[in-house]
Image (spheres, rainbow, N blue to C red):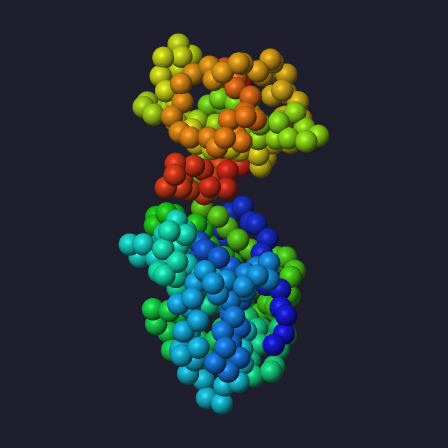
Length: 305
């Protein structure tokens, strides 16, 4: 069986319409190439590692193949779990036995590479290979109407959508503008309560927290008397210019945290954190808040001086 690296997508800022495009949901799970040879199944991560031990129930997908004269195949897709009808990454981590394979591309079939076959034809062939059920489902696509499809994703609080050119070829391991990911980001204004230095830098990441009540209130006196809720660390979006400005504003780190905070830090984080007075805030973009109350995929967008 061939060793294939998954094709990657460019990040795109906004949804759009286009007659040459297909739009799918951005599945919130583990990217996975599905290898089936005879009765053997291999689940390979984006980094080429086997996921069979994590999701043994998906090895039964081989029984779902309905194509005649089948010998082998490689499909591209994502391992997800559903909670109340929506993909839920936390549910997948907590309960691997709930895993479902969502297939969206077919790369290899009966010893033949399909890289040079247009996407729309690869998907048509994929739709005929399996008997879709609770183990494996087909990633349906919306043609042309990307803007309304993105609004649907926002209404259901989904991760976002993928835009793919109908006639695009498959480029293993490459990131091209034939595939675009459009994320459903959220934003919030948070307080900086500390930071973590990193090798070669004064500030590696910011420790941010939110107000538990009345988040629009910005009285410094109020903050001194109330607990803030820790929301995790932010490093993406922290460029050199911003880092220098923040380091100068922070001044000498405090001996202990200047306001009471709710939420746990690891022993290593407690040893490394430099507490500061939260006299300003930051605008942070993220995809969701985890069950542990932490920001997922946070990005610093603006310092609110």
